[in-house]
Length: 312
Image (tube, rainbow, N blue to C red; front, side):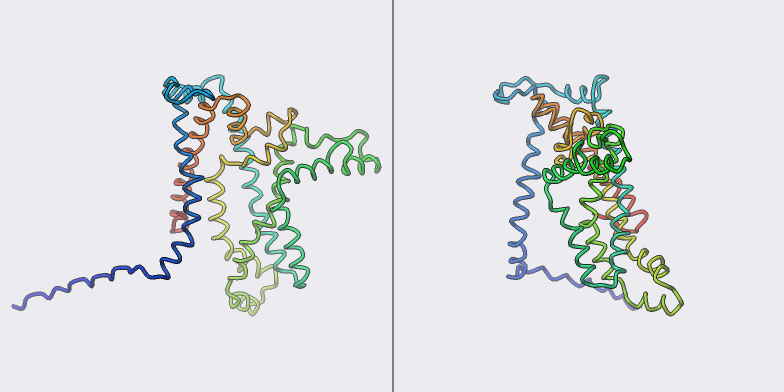
């Protein structure tokens, strides 16, 4: 009886350090250093959340607080509930407006004039690079009591008294969402322009042969081709719901809309630098980071379940 033939696995060749690989690593090395310096080194500051730290006193002479500030975070007198509602509402409104860059990219890609298309794309992308200080100055000059908006409506007889757009707490969430849409839509559409350019032109030709017009081509070819990109960006937005940014709310914050615009990022800043309560602000920041990580991995599992592959 002949013995069975065993086939030994072919050993994988060991990767060699070539000059090309080394040059690519050296190119990315400054970025890694910056990420470590600004994203990981500050994590050592989390230790302040467990001490009753006061500015000017060495940490070694500071009494140990344990989990005291975390108990205050979820205590009955904590403001975190109101702040969390503002944060989630602003994030939810931004997620609701997330399809707008897709619509804008599709409509702009359907324009025939190449120069007009480039002009519109440039004009709509520029606001993304304008600082929030300049944006506030522009919005204030338009919507203040003596701004263009109130002056024009008053002269037309549509209103008798000026409208306080930036100081109305009932519309503060929607005003800020509209400003974000104006500022970010053009920039957010760039990735969809790239996705549209990468679609197979044969699919459009086949649809036209079957009698599809421009709208049918958009509905049955362009939109399905953009859906994977949209889903990934949507899931990333969901995982980042607790981070609304700081600059926007810092410049638009005023006593009239304080209860509506105080999100987590601004709340941490106010507690730390206005109230000099660095340990409590650190505890809030730690809680926000841990919840964001949990959301990220939860969204990653959803992506793996519905798309068949994860996003990280």
